Length: 367
Image 1: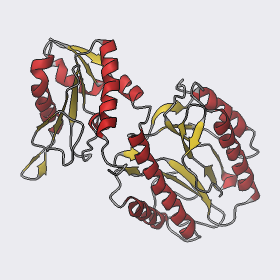
Image 2: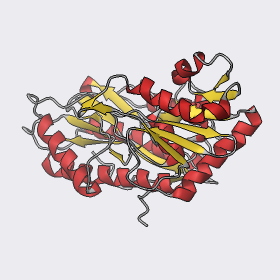
Image 3: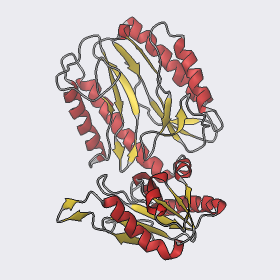
């Protein structure tokens, strides 16, 4: 079996992790409808335009409501289907129809019981006044922080796509190339690496700017820095890393600012391990970048990645997360100023190990 296929044992292991927490919370069932949580539990990914839902009972029985039977084997005990399309037209009431199909399938087992739900699914249970409803959305985010081997394999494949994108970017970025040309070439490079469609893409493709979508009428100019913050997804799992490429030879000021950004990576790699406080790390990075003779750093230092572009841990002063073994996160220090011709942001991806971090983005960092 390919490492990128659905790993049934890994999915069942994730279900067991949730069941353990359900027992602690005395829950008779958990119902989820967010695409990431359905994917995480059963391994099945549906198109973004389709609604799916999953219910895990306390006895370990997993039911999925889907627009059609899964085309491949998944870690699911029961599948109920609903009509997502009428005569090939997508219905706009998929959520309600999907949730009714799911709840009808489990009703006799959960009627009057204690149910864990995502806040966004509360509507389906508000009509069932005999149910005791508990919000488990924060728990699902917590459980998804640790990446299993099958998840890490897909994240690494997504990162491999970004490596090919940056290789192509360094070949074609010259004065006169348009942002839309660069975007198109980079998307093609990722598709060639994956051998299939991307399941997500992003983020920043502007030259002489902190970021934004590509512009068809904007060409790269000599002396500018080109920030490429790339986040393609492979089979639902996102990469997110950034490189800044000088359109021509970098100036002394740009090169000096780059040296301060590199100091942050040295610090991250020397200090992060399980138990390290992520807010504290942000503050330490801010102090390093504040010493730079030019440029300001005024955004987050990074975040977790997985089935969603931004997950925990949050390297951000507005959260107080602690690093845990098995998390995959980004570190993205940057410096911005007009003298830098917009500025630079460079981003590496790491997985937290038992005693430190492993860097997953091994491709060049230079401007």
